[in-house]
Length: 126
Image (cartoon, rainbow, N blue to C red; front, side, top):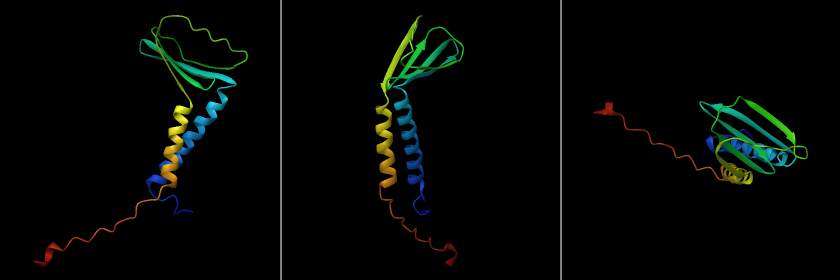
């Protein structure tokens, strides 16, 4: 079993598989809970929250304090008021699918055979 985990490809494959599994868990949880965090960066603040299989990222023009929130979706009413500079949203499967494909390539792909380097000739033989 220890032979399987030799080399950087297999170790990186395990890391990407773990990231894909965590993303999948957040994806499933986002259908029952709305969770997010708001954090200030200099004179603006950012919101990153998950709901209904979508990750939303918003930038606000005014700074706010740190805030972490978690609400069940059936009780959550999200009100966003104020000057918003921009909003970006993407679906979880845009993250989960490439991570899964990359990890399967790294884990299941055949490793390249090691080529033995020839010994350099001795320069002291002159």
